[in-house]
Image (cartoon, rainbow, N blue to C red; front, side, top):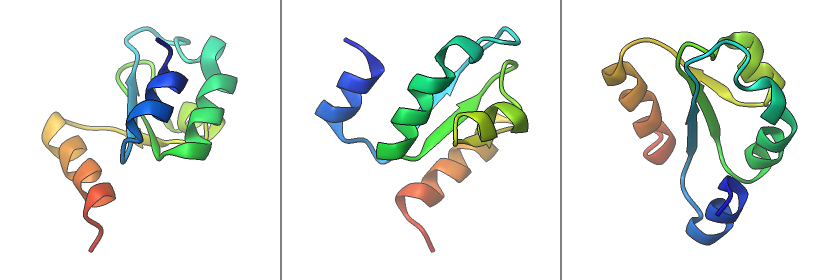
Length: 79
């Protein structure tokens, strides 16, 4: 199953994709932009930076896992 199919089936509050190799999101940028139309998209890992996040219309999850979890929690339970 593709990420797009999972998104349609599960209707998540957010989608997080992570990459470990620089340039990993280049080939999938167009598909990720479509994902971002249906759910908040977050990019993480060594392959992610602000430029990648802008290109895919997502949000960068930077820093340690605790900070990332707090960011995602705000999506689900905004204050």
